[in-house]
Length: 314
Image (cartoon, rainbow, N blue to C red; front, side, top):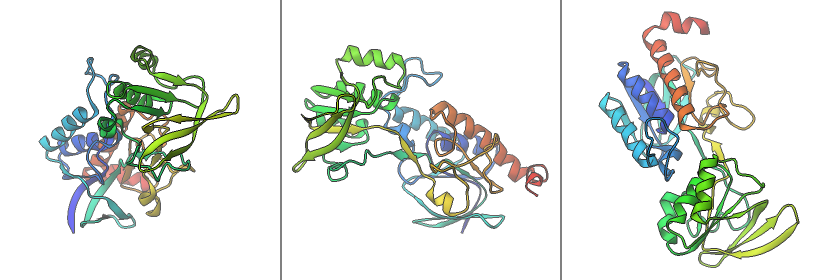
């Protein structure tokens, strides 16, 4: 088995930041990602609230810079290699993937989250055929077409703004009468001509070969109606990627988010967690990066100064 000092599971902002700090501190560092680097950030059309980029930056652009910085300091990044199993009982932690097995002195779990589905009839049947969870990935297929975005947070609003430059008509459905997104983005939606559907829920997706319409429910009036659309983009939150960690004994809350203390330590010595997979209530790039800095700093101490860092677990 390959042996590393630090293995980081996940290559979103938290994982890549931990990689930068871990490798720069001198730890032999491996970052593992089941898909491509970037996590949910890589599918963000535009980021305007990350410090240092007053003009904004694309999600892919920010990801590329972070990956290059990791490699500059010597971290190895494995993409499209999913973690299947962890064995955290021994002093050396074992990580098994679809391709190989690894040992690490310390692990940082930064596996992030996955888009949460609506769970309505027709959604899964038309996934990839009009139902999407990524405007950047699939927006080009809807040039000059009519699309519906579902959600009320920043991701939904930024995706609607992105699609407004491609589609002929963009509608934004939210189950409440006010968006959670930042007001600066909401103002842009109005300027772009996006149509708001307040207090509106999607109850079913219809079509033949691809999406043709949706059933909408107005939750204040109880009215149901059909609406013709070519695409449905869903952004209603995320589900943490923590199952593999839970199976290995890492404690989570009742929603599956990993429990950590102020130093990003889990209940298992030598195992830390950072980013969207943790219980941190603010799911932002900035908070993920802050947690990762703490986790990587603590991981360095756990490996290089064991007398001080491990004694607390005894």
